[in-house]
Image (cartoon, rainbow, N blue to C red; front, side, top):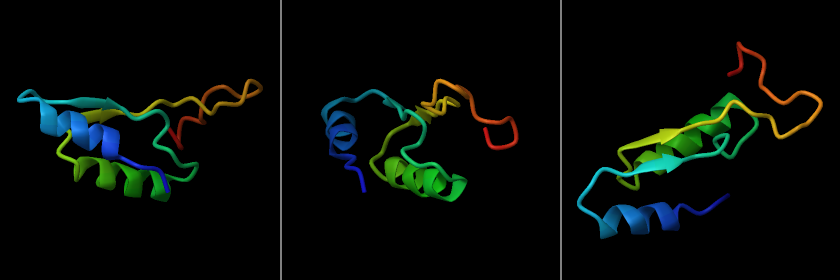
Amino acid sequence: MFQLSNIAEIVAAVDLPVNADFESGYAHQPEGVAENVRRCVETGVAGLSIEDATGDRRTSLCDLPLA
């Protein structure tokens, strides 16, 4: 499991809304992404972005239904 302490620290240090670049949600399955988003929201982050990239050069983007 990955740490969200950096995001929590930034949120706590500023009086502005914080948006997190959340890569691909730090999981391969939608359920894992959903759980990681839930955990990130608990830090107090105002928003986050999730990429639709697979990290695989052969198929660089997720299939549309999965994305």
